[in-house]
Image (spheres, rainbow, N blue to C red):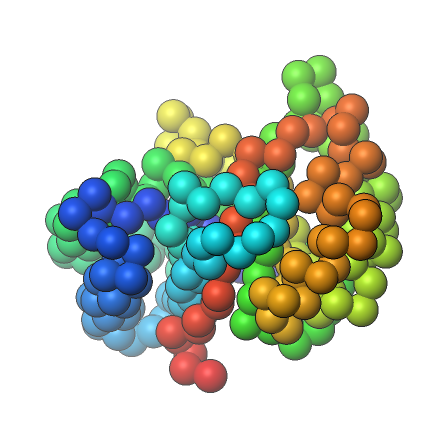
Length: 234
């Protein structure tokens, strides 16, 4: 199976920036990233996305300490290797990260295998959650629990409000120190609007803390985002 590596990272703004100023500064950083992607003739990256955090969304269990989530999808494993081997780009982007983010984004990210669980066109609003399996639970047992218990419960809970669902499973770390984000899955759930998501969480069932996972994993983070695809342009 040809895996298209998917880089995911969570962002916190530089202390000198408000959230609104951070969004524009992050776009500036994104333009620099795309400049170097273009210098490689877009042979490596096939999708580049910024997901801006929606603070004060009123969704229970959401953590507002994060300001966004970035996504980069690569053509294949070789493309990922070529991308990170471009030292000119790495030096320039890391220097720009220091003026944009609280810390380097690789400290809060990983590279994953994407699995589409509920296909659909998605929406602009996305609920993102990261989970870590409990000590003593194997990777295989966790994945089985996720697919056979958590996924159907989540889809039943949200019902037709859920437009798309994707799980992102960590690939083997690229460095001996491991990934900066120590989790076992990052889940993306798309909705038409914040109001739609808010109404679906006000039905009495709490979709942010599913019973199916209580004896298997802990939720590490949950954020509501507004997704913008920078490349290819919609």
